[in-house]
Image 1 (cartoon, one colour):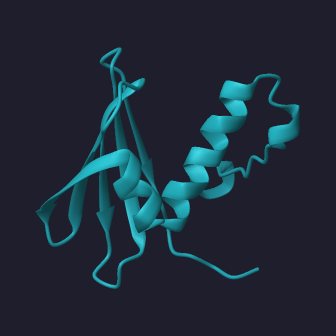
Image 2: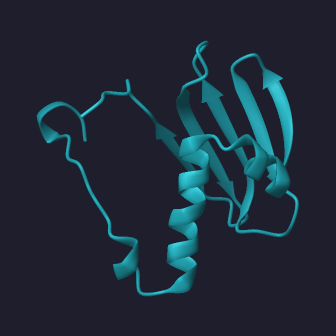
Length: 99
């Protein structure tokens, strides 16, 4: 949600119930850290512009490709996941705030 309807959700990976869910959350951490070495090991990387990068998995996966957008300073701005099932998920990130 946005504004007053905005909520924060937290999730304990230990309560995921399956190894696949735990692996999925670990993979998300790689994206959030923008771990270049790990991403380039698992994905073919292609620069679409100065601020947009495309990733295609090197091996068959549920995700066909991922497009990310970064700010000029290199912070993650948005991520769009294109799934094999033809579903698409877009995640937008706001300003980073230290807590």
